[in-house]
Length: 408
Image (cartoon, rainbow, N blue to C red; front, side, top):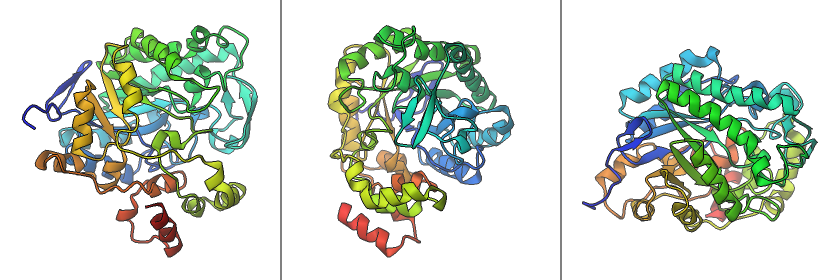
């Protein structure tokens, strides 16, 4: 592995990472009252100590209406001291710190977001479930400004980079996708129109990133995963537009949380486990998921590097760095991705299983592999409790282990 670039530094816009690894922006569910906690700090510091080039705090909302969970971060001035405590500790371990910023759109409820959920169009989100208010054109510049303000807050909190969430069926993705965008003004219809809101948000973020010397990356959907959504040819055009906005890199993902959630992560989610951790406040959903979840949530087959073939289609179309994410759990898989021309790799579940995985890659050989076995317990509990690997839990009920054993 003498010719491997995995453990060589990489210049990502204005910052330099010590190696080519990034902790992906998988939601930790470790916040409290929309702010950081000791658990959140301990986890990311462990990942930084474990050798990662940059670790990413996940799914921070740019404003109150964009919050999906109480355990999520709302990026605002009041939580800067708590976040600064985390970034200082990450930097002390030699890693860079990033934070993902976004807005959930219609993927929330009134009691969480503090208002009726909003989206590009008025309607009903069956997944939440909730009624949705279509945003007025006059409201869009303000939300775009919130994205820019979030970059400024991230800078004040000591972050080196932000990842703007443009995928997975959240607000910007909802504007991009014809499945959720039924507008008849200049923000709907043609792809050019559907990209307008994204462009407004990215312009604000890039301007603030340049002002503060921060890297700005984008998480982008290669495809929504169903007929009537974004497909690869249109997604390539969106990627080219993202490049034109001046961002520093694009992370290529897929899937639409309200329709094809497992297209994001692959595999079969343990639905009884998911229902077990749901609060009694969500009793109707708890019952539905427990009884019918395995039929309602489509299974996508898991294989290592599951996004690679699609991601390669983008490599020849854009010139800026591309970050690969999707099923990386071994040195062999990582080297395969880097060999295809991707500059950086993101991992999540391998680092939930073992925060020191990157150091073990450096000390090992091509046979080095994560202990993650893709039962997706961590994701099943993530929506209700902090993300933890089943192999790191001591209090899992027998009935949950019975389901997990069947998935293995």
